[in-house]
Length: 391
Image 1: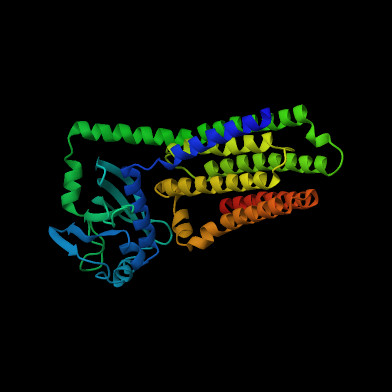
Image 2: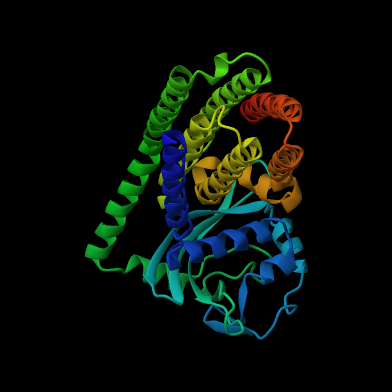
């Protein structure tokens, strides 16, 4: 009974952490997400996806002229050809700051650069973007969309990029106190980005150590592993699976922080706790029956790890230190980016359903062997992915 009480308590903590994680969406973060989608579609030369980030009517101020786009479809794909003729290959944000923000509107001062195919810088620009909530029927969510831009044209009459002098002057004439605040904020962001990998790995290591201690205590106290016959074999397989899951989680986070630099949000801090709580529940329920539910919890742990990856990638894509990696990644179809993990999760849930319906110890034993094989495949894929990105 005490085992189930502890598992239920950990599950309650998990639900609380997940709810707090899901609520981490400020207007500033939502606006930056719109700009991420804007840049991704632009680099992919996907005019339809690019205009999907617009709020219509869309306003653009450049060269002292106001251009109004009343609806999608008023831009021509030739603008990408004109840019390519100047040597442009892709663009990336250099800095973005929400200088004003409300519940329905965010003003973002940005600086971005255009690059050639070899990664050399072609030009850089400063601009001011206004992102507002879109209009939706009552009861539907109102996502943020790009409403107005004050900045450079895509190309000038000769096809060469240029800077909007009005925006540059506005940025340079900010009060000295505000400029000092910007410099301090930039220094703090750089400090956080540099120290975050060490903080995250330390946090993950502590949580994984606690998960290992919970697993060891369960083996010593309950001794389900040492029961003769099929029940003992099932408990032993569960123990090995939890052990490999703990190792896989640590490898996942270690590779993530060694590959990329990003400015963390609240979700990044809560994620290790959410995944750790699932691991604690899995360790507590070794040999306790309810094997279908146990496998389903393992599936949710991998789904949570994938959500961590999506959040970290979204933030890392904003940082110039990560180079053009995300230009290639985000250009891939959605199914190619998320399909393998979602397929793996769906397969685990399918195995969980079979075990729950069969209610057979022999079926459970075979299913756990399949789960262990899937975990070993995941470890091998992590190894392949690591060498494919660092070599």
